[in-house]
Length: 232
Length: 271
Image 1 (cartoon, rainbow over the protein chains, first blue to last red):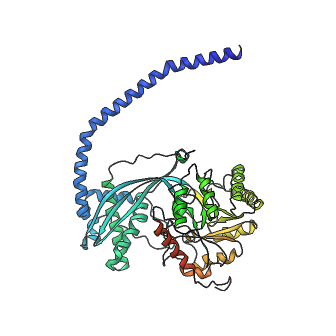
Image 2: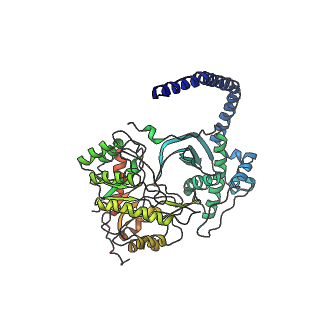
Image 3: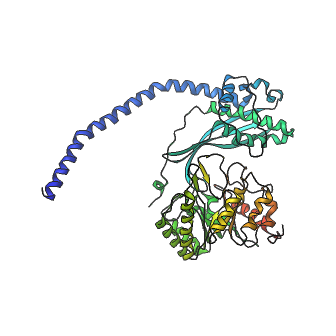
């Protein structure tokens, strides 16, 4: 067979392949899109109802987050955090253990205000550490304790590549993000150091639980190839 | 007055032009190229333009130039890439380049020889182009127990200095804040251990748990020990200033500069 005949036969095969399958695949795309659209329409009343109650919940937590102290959600949250191992201590400092029953917390015997508001999901496709760029997912919240108000960001996941990501556990988020911020906010109260440590921990669990209630939208993680953004 | 260099990683998430324009307007003339800025078609052109206007450059690890890539010298060495990079740095009159040592899998034990070979090759490429070459001190990670950073302890650094006499050391003071198994005196002893072989000193702050590159303040652990810093070694600021305005950047840099001004430096061995 000559080169020209070989190329012509190959091209005929390609055309035949496309004629056989392209239309069917396009039809499948259309059918799937229609089904997703129908499902979304059916889902809408449920989403609306959830949004309505979430709004009430947000309003309540923005006034007084202590309302969660006797909730089953907080007990479940404490149990879930405690499934993750505590931080490794390098100086033999004893780990402060949280009481699984919030009714016995020191916080119940202190009457300062605690509230949380303005939960905003955050995505940064241009994040970077010392060595690599990546995408971070997290949120920003505003917290009030007594007469102190502070906003801070929490990163819950770093996506380095389609096959590599790093998630932070609930315990890491509570211990590394909430506790230091709350500890700083408690300083003006001039508490004894052990009392401050205990209250920081209890408030971190309480507010960490509240955040999870506010974040009902699941995170859709995606990875962007940085090179796609370079204009060449 | 000791000249303070500012890492380009302090102003990341934006194209190189935006970052350099901000630093230039804030009066900064000594910039260390590093990770952080977004790649753009004009990156090299912008670096050349600000070079002509008077900015001097050093370079650190995974810089953004006409290419951008991350690398782990303990596991791979793309010689062709580093030839292109060092050629470009020489053309840009960059006379100092430093890297992170890299990390090895906790399950592997034979990577060290690969690592030393890669460092030797990179050191030679730099040496041939009259670029000083250094490797940075690291720290043990709390988060990833499957990998082990190299140069994360005094013992490893001492071994490295003995094994690689032609390579210098970059001391990152914030990384030393993540060393929890030695005293302040032992950390500062690095300055004597690597005497005459310190390429530069990186500065920022963190929470003692993660390398967060936060702003320096009077409570930052090393601030009260500035007199122990070797006097002739460049200082590179790495605290993040992303999204800040020109005046904020100017003030932050001036405040950091002020920490070093007027400090009487102890000669090595006197502290």
